[in-house]
Image (cartoon, rainbow, N blue to C red; front, side):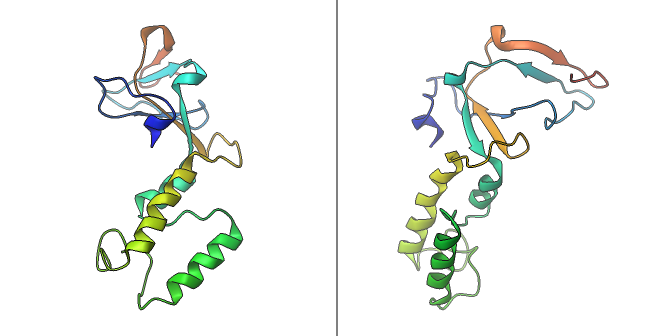
Length: 143
C-alpha cells in the first residue's frame, strides 16, 4: 500500500520504519546507532501507528464509531467466537466477504485524524547521505 503513496525504488525490498520525532524514537543500544534525518516530504509515507496494530492483528479498522458498531453487529451475527481469525486461523476462508472488508480497511492506516508524534510514524524506502543530520551512538544525547 505504501508504494501507492511514494514509489519504491527498484532495488529496494522493504521500507525503513521511522519515528517522526526525537521524543518518541528508540535510543541506540550497544552495537546500534540512530540516524537523525531530514527527509523531504515527498519521500515519507506517514501512517497511524495505532491503526497499524489492527493490521498486525488482522483486524478491521473502522472509519468511526458508527462503522465500528455496524461491524461488531455483523460479526455477532456470525457463528464465530472472536474477530482475530478471519484471515489466519480457524475461520480462514470461511467468510471471504469479511476478509475482504478487513483487508480493504487497512488503507485507513494512512488516514491520520490526530497528528501526534507518539501516534504518527513514517516509512521511507531509502536513506540518502544528504538526509543524515546526526548519527547518535549509545550514550549520546539524541537532541
